[in-house]
Length: 132
Image (cartoon, rainbow, N blue to C red; front, top):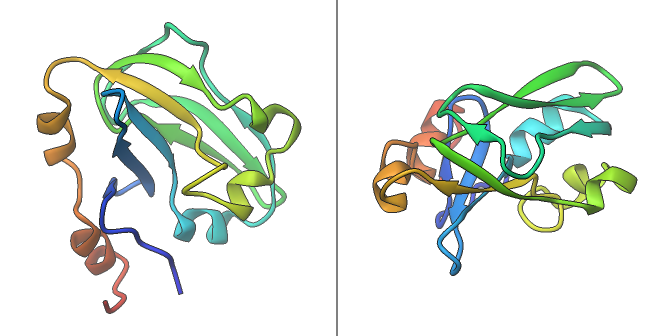
């Protein structure tokens, strides 16, 4: 069963977004996504300073099964990329909501407003057709 955390917001493309204490939005893929992809072998992420457009591709994630696009959940600028994934992409499988995060974005405009456009945990759960 997929781990869906109530404090996070979600996209239909199976990314999660979480506002940090620093005012940036940390982004990763959901537990459901990492399970569907299988073993992650490589993650191609944008450089710090790259503009991000909501719902536009920002990188790729490669598993033993496929290569999938990664999408930005909000408009903004990439301010941090998880350096651990270069040598340990499997962290995305092992800890998709913790050590396996992908990028951090400084949102353009109000970060709370940007997150409100994303799915709540309940809406994401409903999209996946799984119960509480």
